[in-house]
Length: 113
DNA sequence: CGGCTGACGATGA
DNA sequence: GTCATCGCCAGCC
Image 1 (cartoon, chains in turn red, yellow, blue):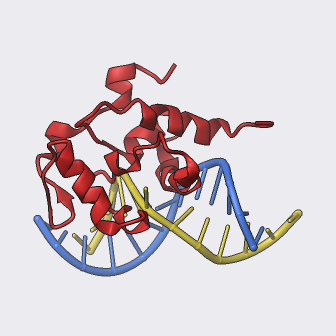
Image 2 (cartoon, protein in one colour):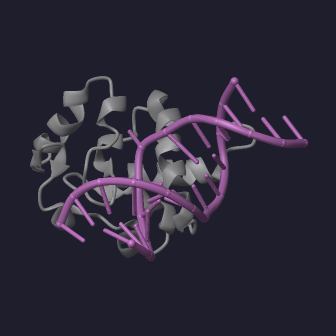
């Protein structure tokens, strides 16, 4: 409550806006926040979001579509399993046609506003 | 207050 | 195309 982390809060806002069957990258979110250099911070924020049920972290992967954060999930299989449920094919921990499923917050939201 | 961490990204070889 | 290294920048110890 007091002193809300604007950066982290912004990240959660965007991640929660990711539509079903879509994925995005840490760099895309970071850039949407105006700090493309803080792509790593996005992952950090995800760790803090572990107690937040509305954070589809499984829809957030790195720029190449690899499920880098799956190991941080309750179950490693859960991340790729959830993506499969959304119609996203994950082979070798990498999203197939990643660019096709890629959801750019800047293009869709035109700034998180 | 100083330094390390980290679910990344870009660039160079 | 792949592999290695540097840079980023907020949070945390």
